[in-house]
Length: 525
Picture: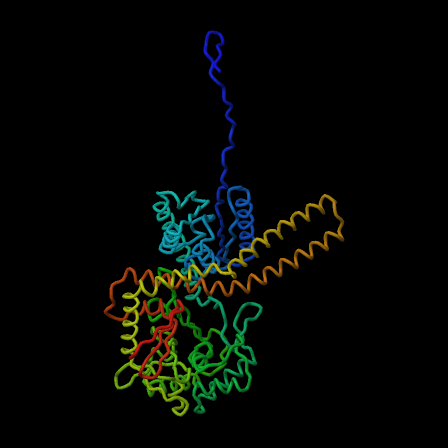
């Protein structure tokens, strides 16, 4: 019914109830932090603890952030990403989809190698993970971030190279003056209170025994076997081998001399054996000898003569891994290693057991060019069949990586966080004298015991998941390579080194390539 009020017609009034807006829970940003100190000195370790505490507090202060872990490295160079375990664990967590954003103090703490830095940043951007560098105020999530990063990363690399050059110059001056002290001393020596090399009597007797056995006609493998049978320990507690014995016989330090700079680091921080690329420094009578010069020369002349008789080139007497296949070919018949030989002017690989005792292994040698051709064929098959083989395998591994073990690790991380919070609360209660010392100590001990159990379980699970994650990473590298590379026409050593863990040779019929990603592929030869 309509009414009039003040000359105006008033219609029917209907009450509309207010509705509450629907609030959707916003997903929190999973934030992790990365810290690094380049040495393991006490002051550097203290700096690391400060960094860890800083980022831990920073992440927890943001209500829209979720703590995704603190990753760190100590005593490791910043110029090589692949040898930093903490960084690799961080990258693995990103690949598994556990992290959205990373906090780092500075670019130089993250990486001093421009190539490594940009490669990592691009990979993480593809994964949807951003990085914030606190010192430079650079966020890789911004459009101009990569350009700024390239400039600053280059500066960090220049700074690292400058520091490295200064250190090298200082070391070389000490080498030239004969004042340089080796970072380690060989078997048979120890350091005195002044840091100088002095003879260690027990080990020195073993050194003399090795030289005597060689000049009495024994081979290096036989000498190693003799030392093992006598239960004589090595410096690091490992096993004696023919190569170890050979290296000792060729070590000039046993006659009191010292050659410095046998190896060197190049401009991209890779270490190489020095074959004349940089200066070496020979200091004669540097320390007290264990072996006379006459004995040393006769022993080394015998080693050289035996090498010539076996067709081993002069440079390879020390059995250095100078070739792509060195130390990576296993005999499928006896399980022994294959070594490089020269047969009728052709390079070949022969089973060491077969060479020593033909009755123990019947394997015949395999030509070097045959092995290389088999590798090229194998890799070309992968390039051709990447969509049918590698991509499905990669997708399956990525999917399966979120198994019970990974979920349990996440649970354990949360339990450790809760445990830490309870410890903090307990200390506050004691400080306010709400609980006494007896109750405080009892509860604290229980929390410490529980935390230790969590960490132990986490360590066991990490061994499994890290191996799995490593295979995923290696498979991803192989997949990216096959997607961007045309069919190969020749053997390339760097590709073999990058993708193959080892080869198993089954006579002259077939070989198996054990790839770093876990695949095993057989080729008929």
